[in-house]
Image 1 (cartoon, rainbow, N blue to C red):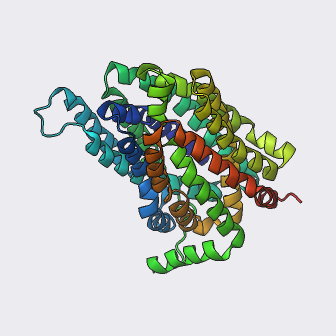
Image 2 (image 1 turned 90 degrees about the horizontal axis):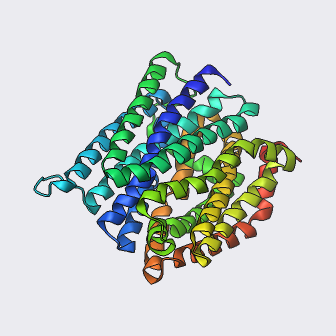
Image 3 (image 1 turned 90 degrees about the vertical axis):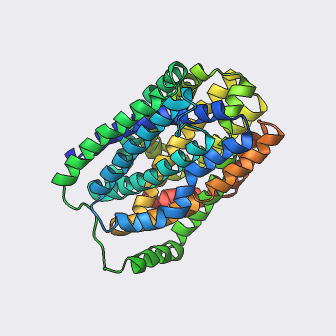
Length: 406
């Protein structure tokens, strides 16, 4: 792998550690502030809302500017946001302060972090096609996914629950340090690297965005894939919107052990990210895409039907394993279908649709949870599974096409 990719990977490790801390600390903090499932679902909804609002323009920006600088800016903003979050949580012991964490402040923080995530994800995914040869991309995506799981799920996630139980502000403080480290690495790359894969075709920003949307619509395989994953995203969001309440109040997991339990489930994602290239080579990209996208919702359904800690961990393991395979092979397929020089625009447009519906799905999950905390997993998982099975032939054919298999 090129040296520049390895440096990007190191920065990703630092930011993913911070993400792992916040992945656990934010929902635990929300559950501390309120037990209302609808309010909890709004938190999940707001984490996805920036994709609906900003993915397309940010994708256009990623095709016009130096992407390392864009990544560096996103991480610097996350340093500032998490520093402020630390201050707000610290003031929970000082109710006389004007700035004290409550559910509405948490909404704002999660939304702003979501905006930064749109920038960081779009910029990094837009960098990879120009950084790696076509035959390196599947392994490159697997390396990025592996780093994410190792650092986020096996370091950040389990540590977060323990730190949260010790002091609720500590995970946010350490998270800000993690993003600061990533920022230092990226700003160094931004000053030394060329404008990698950032080649604007014109000075008309709006025209470039329109071109991206037109490409998305006219490339039928891309468009159908986006519509398929959009429907999946809606019901996946519904199934997971109130997972923290399901874990705490139905399964009976404590706040201190919540991160550790999530880590055990995350082992599946690590294994999946390591062996995906081998599975794809042996069985074909299309077959593995179809199997993984059906396996994940099936595991979610079982979690909802049998709410005990063993099934919860095993279900998380299978879901994480399958999702990891799907994400790696799906991104490799998109990188085959979409030219590198316009990847940011197309990536932004598709994420607007795919993740833009997630806020609505999360709200649906909140109202389903008001009936029973098991209902979102059972209903959301069942509909997702039906959609996946109905599109099996399309997924297999597209996966084989993008891996040059016949």
